[in-house]
Length: 184
Image (cartoon, rainbow, N blue to C red):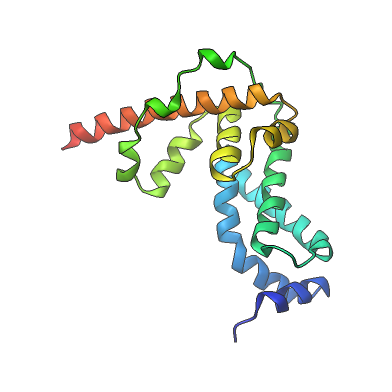
């Protein structure tokens, strides 16, 4: 028997273990992939996921029912990842944005040849600051002003971290493209 999202939410609010399990089984895969984008390792991603779901179960009474339930869970998981990142005391070194190469000058031809796992591996290689801002801006869709507030950095630092991330990704993609050409 399939359980609806509304039944899962109400069951979790009532503390029913079987519906908490159903919620976890329904969303843990997607949320784990989010955790992997922010984490340094699979183990750290698993810890973030666990912390995120503990918060989901604790705060499920606060879900107003407006908007996407999955989106609500996603925000909690992303915030859990950001808490871990803040504890790492990442150095978000700022540079003058005018000295950063425009990432739009590049074409990302190699991306179409990579699968999701390969692309994730390349993103994982980015330094923590770059990776965090890249994930928040490009994948999660936050604005630089929001990112700056979340990470306690300036908007300019957020922009420079994104530009640096894009430039480094372009270099890594170019390397990958060269390697693929050598294989052929």
